[in-house]
Length: 143
Image (cartoon, rainbow, N blue to C red):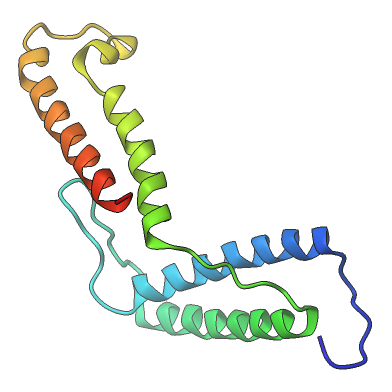
């Protein structure tokens, strides 16, 4: 917002618009990361960049254009920058994963069909270990 310019948003509108544009900005950041180099992968997922070089260049050009619009809107409308703290982000995600893991025990999979009697011995110790790791991570984060 420039000096002498009327405030175009009330506080509720400012928060709502800031939240929405923050989500778009986060998405644009993720797009840049996906297109900037090696594709992320883990033991249980792999991202494959199947865009051509031309598509990649066009996408990145539009990402830059969107970033410029976001910067302009933030300045003109006095939008707030969302600050994320790693310990809060980790704590929230770890709580979600703890719940998901608890629901991944062999007995809980019965809702998806008959469970092999041998699954308990194979799966449950792995799930227990993952739950223990999640709990240990959370303990470090909330210190």
